[in-house]
Length: 261
Image (cartoon, rainbow, N blue to C red; front, top):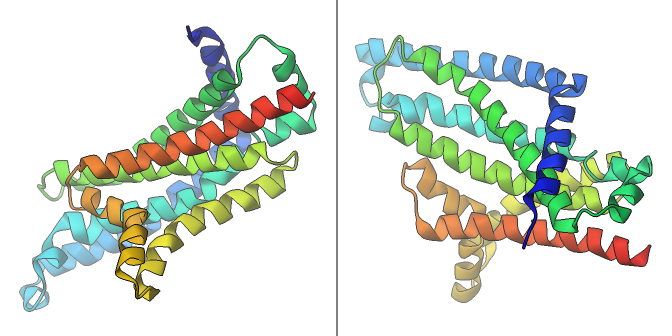
């Protein structure tokens, strides 16, 4: 039977490490500044178009919908930030352990490889959830000015969280491949960007079968439904399959290091 206590010990240690790290607060500060500037620009543009009859003439319904005009661009910027921020958070998880030789202590301790992976993964996931919570301050503030339905925005934010969860799994795997934090950081960014380019290949392929396969494994395809406010079973299966795959690969890397030592 799987023992949750070692997982919790790793989780607690890593989570405390995040919230005691000056790097984490510096990244939060930079993220808040960027989101604040971009959200203010989008919000002011939307407010002007909503109050000006001339600007409303010829505008599409989406341009006059705060979810599409303000919140989705805001979440898109959050996702773009996570492409680079998640590698900055995860690059030290295993690579630094190897560099300072504490990884050997983990391998010789009575802690399973799965417990190591899950503890580090969920600690990072909670940190990402906190950052998404920070990004939601802006929609909350805009509630004072405009009335709107929360459900589409919440579902869209859930989609961004799932994408970030995939980033964490891939970047944890990247961190397990090297004892150099910078190498792990660069490799993580490559992973994060490459998963988006799969969807772009769909446009350049002529074969219907190949196009169908690329569309099925495209992150854009499965995220699109969540952005529209719809939760689809195949999309959830896709995201959780990617998370499982990269967490499994990380566990295999750790286990192989244990047996080789």
